[in-house]
Length: 370
Image (cartoon, rainbow, N blue to C red; front, side, top):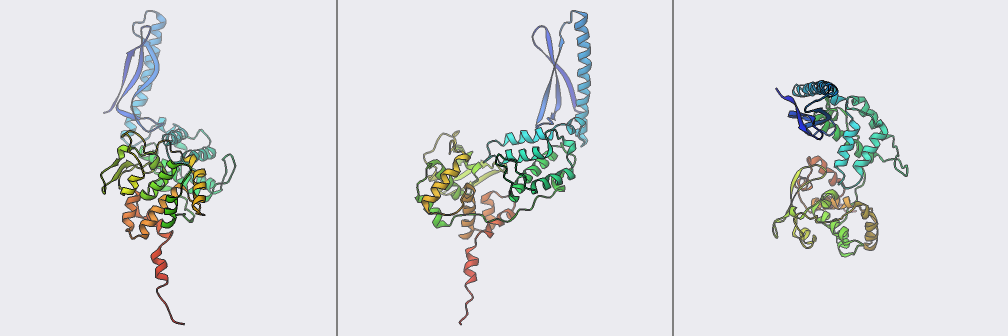
């Protein structure tokens, strides 16, 4: 049977700090991570010399034993699949905030805004035991109402609501897997259905135009073209290390962990893609150092104008370009899905709707004489 042991260690003035030693480790209710020790910020006197010190030791030991017994129950509850009252009463908001902070290096402030919208809806004192299907559906309706809490107060679009609710559901799944929820709300609550939108992408001729056109930032230009040649998201381009660029001419590949899916990937890349990276740096250096999402828009606006391209091209458009050009040039859908790092080929199907030259060619094959 797992145990919780009381431990002490010497501190100043003849005192002993008291802490708990968990075996096996307990899960921290705030972040879900294993925790071996819990420091109680309590102390006893090593050699009590007065009546007051002896009384202090007795009361402190009684308090410590009460805490130890509670933690022992936590371990037993976890063993039998229950969730302790201590975990049920811990803050889901803090859990959400900690998760958001762990994603601070992602492509934009999308995670931060997803947290802000949930906090706006629920307040800042929501605990795990408050979460149920009704609350989740209520939050879905809140997002679908198009609230605007940004500085400009602009109502969010449906597809933004889709994104924020998806992040919330991901967190529900994470909490359930960590036994912080006793119901799999991720399965019980359906996602918001996206509204189909036109996904901007570049024709091969337009892609070449951008390659031939100078940009205000060579760093951003090289990063965007690299994304168009590899299909990487901004987050993966930004966090790429030289140690992850491997292989030799004709056999280059990237070995990295996707920021979005946290999946380990080995992605074959072309010689051209590696060539555009420039001179190789040290293994622990970023391939695109100091690449900032906030710098993209002004650079892209000027770059596209110079190239004569009147499209709303974003960094993610280069990933769309990679996918649609691969399909256009005959690469099988399953292969494209694997290159993009999609967990399901259904996700890749969205790119078949962007443009299909084969369908355009087929439309003109049946000809009649008039």
